[in-house]
Length: 74
Image 1 (cartoon, rainbow, N blue to C red):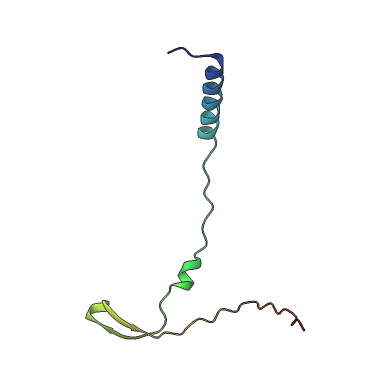
Image 2 (cartoon, rainbow, N blue to C red):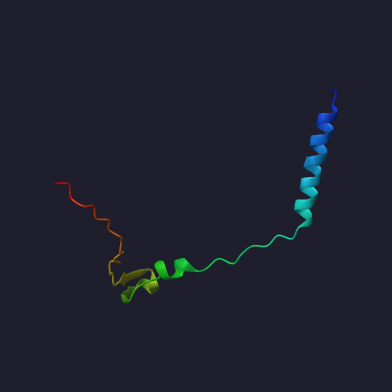
């Protein structure tokens, strides 16, 4: 298989990108525990079978939404 100088340039560029990517330290930003509040249990009203069965108080969350009102034509 014959390689041209274009292939050599692309391989060199790829190798450079890989080396730089491996040399930089990987940093992950900490995630906020937003799901803890959303999916936490409400008030537990009844528990049976060692905690396998739970009756939880349910309160529907009301989500406020912005309403856009258009002037009526006429």
